[in-house]
Length: 492
Image (cartoon, rainbow, N blue to C red; front, top):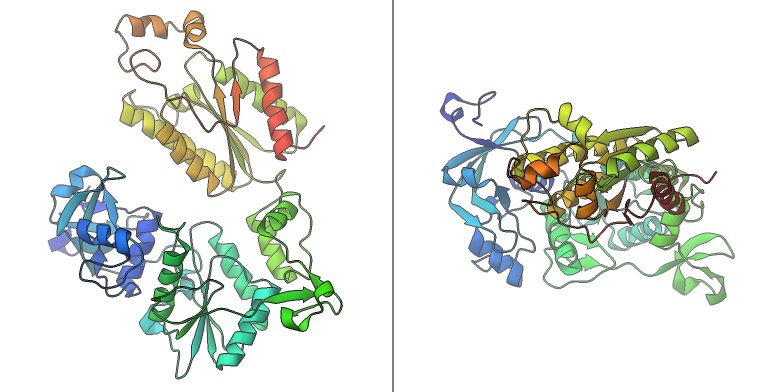
């Protein structure tokens, strides 16, 4: 694809590429100057040095890799236009290196960026600011960079530290692409409980590959906070070599005697009420029970309930996978009928054959087209799930990697259940209502799953069915039992 709309004539013949969500966020932060001294995406040597020791090749501290994955065909170009999901060109990249990631085995491009326009995608974009647009004034500035809402404990700690430092406060909600709008709304909802003059600036900073490394995540947050003018970062963890000092708050607890949050040192030991753990909070939300007022302000509790609805109201995808003739379509249709009969859920059935005739008409049965077919099913299922519906999918989906992509798409907006219809190949071939196996054995159908192309059995299935050992009705009952046990469907 070549660049056209909104570009100077000299750039219209350049190829275009739309980065993924993480890379698009990195692009926005690169163009805004938040990632300085970086001026573009990293090359192989810089990336290896960052992964190995948290430094660029020239010795500059940098916590996480910032790379751009592209199809191999783009690696032959000297310049490419990077655009947002709507096709709006954002920057021109001058390619200085094309390299293959040794672990992911995909191709990457490195090189500096020339901004074309500021990105304008994502929720609450009107609140976003470039660092040079933020007025922090003189004196200390305390930043809180968070991926979670601030509850009563964190609000109290923030006010205490800000007062101790005599600092203005900068609240930086880290947008990860999942429930971003609820996070920002939750912070705006408690604005009156934040120190006077607090600025709230959303920052598109999704977790990177090193998200499990708390030290690197903290260093990245400190770098971002420093770019926005902060002099201190509030965080429970500690790390050496951060861009600005990290301030750990004094331990706080809930004093059940006087019903207030305050420093633990000022509470009688037998009056300290344990804070809700994340698991306890999730359990309350999953069951649709109210989050107690002593734990978080009502406005935050309301946003938590929006971001994590009760399981019986939450969007869900039930994804069947199995060989042709395994019985997955029969069980999927039976499940859809049974759920409609029970009521209480909006059900959408995405059967493999029906999808092929409508959503994926024109695709072949090559591996690339089969993967594209599954991705299309996953996209539609994710949209159904996003809006609280229950999507039932029944494609063959033979490849583990593509199934994982669909799981990730759906899990970002709701819940995902994988059902492996593990009917043996011999039984599937014996049924062979359409004569497909016979044609495949005769070499008339190339790349036929189970005969001339592999089926990668799931190792992450939530339920395994064998329709050679059970009736369709019994199989449907097993799936419903799983959904009832998981809380997605109410008991009769």
